[in-house]
Image 1 (cartoon, rainbow, N blue to C red):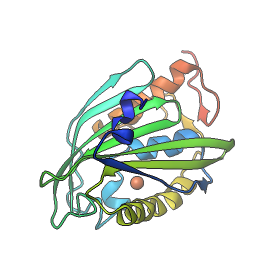
Image 2: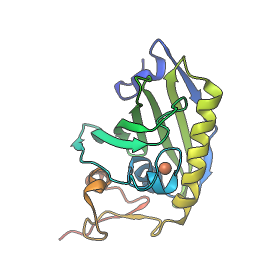
Image 3: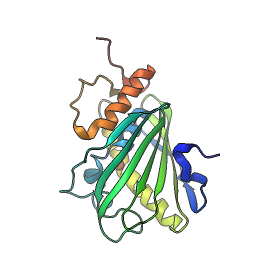
Image 4: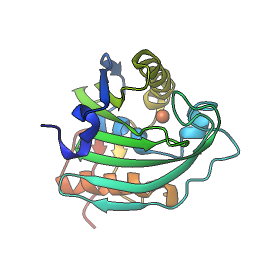
Amino acid sequence: MEPEWFQEFDESGYQSVHHAPRLVHASGPRIIENFLDMAHIPFVHPGSLGAEPQTEVRDYSVTVTEGGVEAVGCVFWQPASGPTAVHGGDVAYTYRVAYTFVAVLTKWPVDDAPNFSIMLVASPVDEASCRAWMISAFSESLDAGSFHDFNEAVFDEDIPILESQRPQRIPLDPAAEMHQRADKLSAAYRQYLQALGLTYGVLPALPR
Ligand SMILES: [Fe+2]
């Protein structure tokens, strides 16, 4: 049975693609946090998932769930809202962290195109590298090869950013970095990791 946070995976009318695992020289928290971050999209994925000057991240809702965190109502302008999009428009995302290093995004493109979901799993190899596993679930009406290649190209753009971020272990002290409104989800993710008492891939906040 499919988990409720990845319903499209074996829902009728949907197909799935398992991407080959990628070795990424970044920690699990860095990889998941980047996946949750809308603010980077126009700068790291220009022309496909974003474009300047439309860089504003509008307000959205974040809740702490039983197993992690969830953000809904994430609306963002994109020049190509999906593999078959012919013009730009607002898309809506839902992000869910289901477990520590497992996140799922669901995206509703414009033009009544069917929604799709991508699950990313960061499987630690050592303190500063992971294998990143990605599974996409999307409408049978979409071409699987195009969908696979589109998502691979997007991830190719993320990898150099992930591997160059410092510190490699993300600081969990909210005062350690400047946080903007757009960072609400990553701030909640960091709080969740802190509450778990995680020490891998993070710089835990010290007791005050
Ligand atoms: Fe990205």
